[in-house]
Amino acid sequence: MKIAVDLHIHSALSPCADDDMTPNNIVNMAILKGLDAIAVTDHNSCDNVQAVMNVADGRILVLPGMEVQTKEDVHLLCYFEDIEGLLDFDACIRHFMPQVPNVPHLFGNQYIMDQNDQIIGERKELLLSSLDLSVEQIVQLVIQRGGVVVPAHIDRPSYSIISQLGFIPPNLGFNVLEFLKFDTNYTIYYQGYKHIYSSDAHQLGQILEREMLIDIYNVSLTDIIQWLKGFTVI
Ligand SMILES: [Zn+2]
Ligand SMILES: [Zn+2]
Image 1 (cartoon, rainbow, N blue to C red):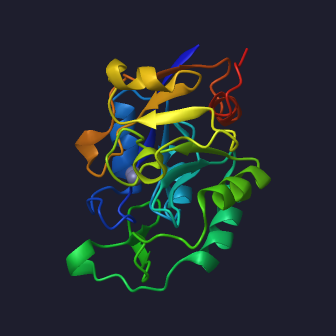
Image 2: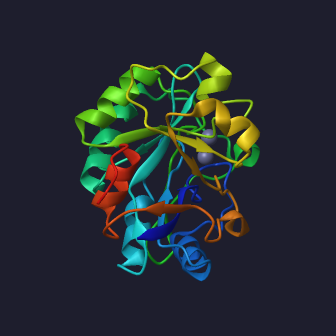
């Protein structure tokens, strides 16, 4: 069956995202737009994912995820089948985060929220930083936890694997590439990969409509992860 997804959405934890990207607003907007599955992928962090999953409560699938910035300034989307895998990954990468303090009035707030959209904390270090981990190291850490990595917005002129490395490393097992726009003049250069389109929403209105459909057998996190790993799910 075909399900509509938007697997790249930022919450109020990302300094560059609006403060009204709260767990309830994100889930309700995604349901309003008719989506079947979403992922909240904040920069180098995942403190709001559990609250989003609690709010969703079975009404829409929430794939645990994070958008990591590697030491090469490459953005990678890291997805896990369960919250435990994501939290374990998060605990690991925190050791490689530069301890540069956030300046909220310059970069924005980094709010941690509960399932009632109450602010319960704030990340103090600037999350818009490059981890001291390479693309290859991130891939290894994610795979060790059963997850899957998707290079983010490869059609963007900055912070993409193409803008930073100039090519897709063939030995890292990437199966799916993310684009911000479906432009066949561009995607044609990346045959042999599955292509996914996401909003990279930093504002509520940017969340996708039912425009990116993936074909899976069961509406489940397992099947979405398998699809992202390149398997045909039957
Ligand atoms: Zn990005
Ligand atoms: Zn993003």
